[in-house]
Length: 89
Image (cartoon, rainbow, N blue to C red; front, side, top):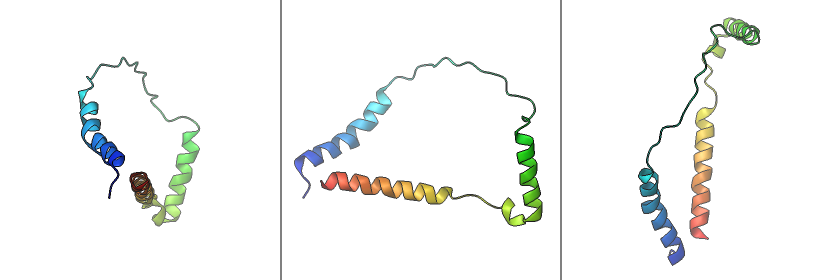
């Protein structure tokens, strides 16, 4: 069974957190815009040509997408496990 304190905390998080988040009025934040440089910097050019050379030598490099799905999956799973541990203690 769920302890009363845990049940109260869970209820407060489920009901009050979304209401508190939506209750805050949106206010304008002053920003300062700076023009972007027109051409890539000198440091970026050799790196880009290096990547282009690697893509020409190995077409598999051009299709590389990285491990973003793995990172998101592991982070999400860790968060779920942490919440379950907190609810059970």
